[in-house]
Length: 121
Image (cartoon, rainbow, N blue to C red; front, side):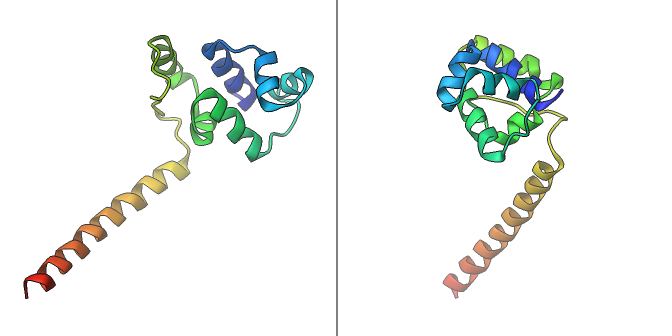
């Protein structure tokens, strides 16, 4: 699924028209349609704008695919716009970040223990 297809799918699920999106992005409808048709390279700042309008992060937008389409659709139908689960299509960077966070949490707990021991002495 291309980024344009992802944007189009999510826009439709949100009940927004191309005109709505173009207006929110402050661009012409023609320019917006080119984004959905993958006729232009989208700068990261524009991806972030689009993702914000759709109520997700740019990382989630880039990782959005058929595997998590149904979850997003169900969540949107229930009026829960904040929840979004990224499944197996998560970019590798996300997994690397998660591993770093886990290591930092272990280190933080260790440092807290050291502080506790030094306070008691």
